[in-house]
Length: 148
Image 1 (cartoon, rainbow, N blue to C red):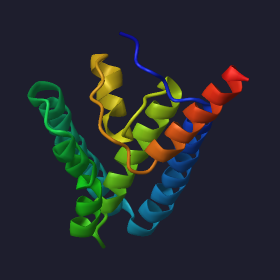
Image 2 (cartoon, rainbow, N blue to C red):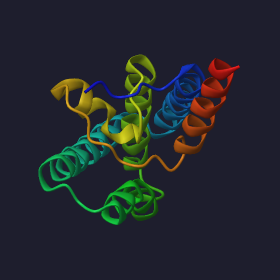
Image 3 (cartoon, rainbow, N blue to C red):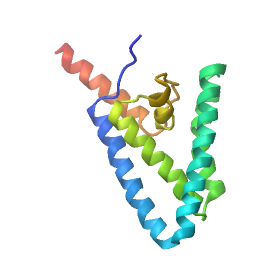
């Protein structure tokens, strides 16, 4: 069964936020120097490993919708825990790359699974706290235009 793709406004929002985060990362890394680059890479690797685990859990374990929503809050918890550290740029780098992938392939749902979904060609649907409302509104508007 073909899943519904994100429409143009959702893709542009994801692309715009990805560009903003990439710009922010380069600004912050410039302040940290070589140490910042290393810690950013470490942070990226840690966050990527965490989300590969989440992706596996969602695909294999089929958690309840409540657990899925809690999983989407994990990035916020990571930012709070890692605050003030160059690892935060690694978190931003993971989100920026995920947003670029989600914008390019129209991945619906939470952007944190976009990379894994693109690699394994299998989607794990997590509710997207940030973009879910925009995607839903855009779908309703397009459906209304098609009916008219």
